[in-house]
Length: 121
Image (cartoon, helix red, strand yellow):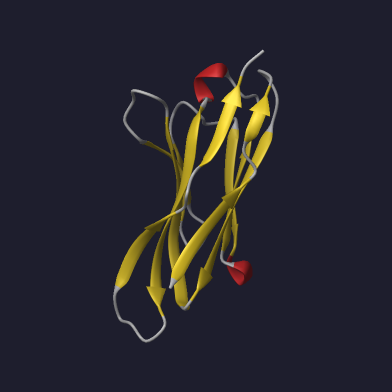
């Protein structure tokens, strides 16, 4: 069994910062690309940022310069540092990871449970 556990969400004022954490655990052989998505009420889930096992990153245009994705491969953990937060960043943030389980040759993707980020005065 593989699980992604997210934490770090909360309520913050505009201009504030939050750091999200997503840790993969279970019968893991390797963790490949890891991504953060978000979904606001009534909207499609959108890609926020991604990072490969080698450290290559990409960001949605709306968060470039404000958010930073990073990872600790030894801990199978991905982070999302969110600075200069805006009300439009309010959403449930989901971690996604492509993982090869032990005793498997297949790479599958897994979702975290989501963590709420609310940016409001």
